[in-house]
Image (cartoon, rainbow, N blue to C red):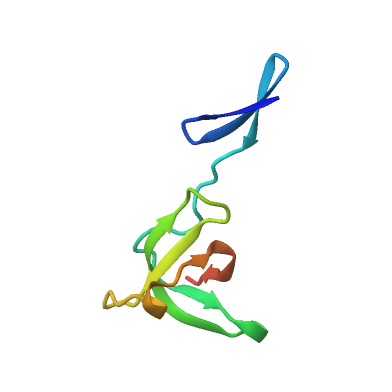
Length: 88
């Protein structure tokens, strides 16, 4: 079995039929989305913030956040998607 990358998908090839080993998943949040909160302990949360950048090349997707005036949250710390939530 060999593994090949094609565009952004990762395929495993066994015998004659390749299959997707890991599909690219669209990010849940997008740049300039507002009302993004960081989940904290015991149900608390921090925010609201905006999405400054998105790295969808990794799993889970990672984000940097900024305040409404553009200041980076926690000096540009990267947050995994599982630590964020959006309130509308």
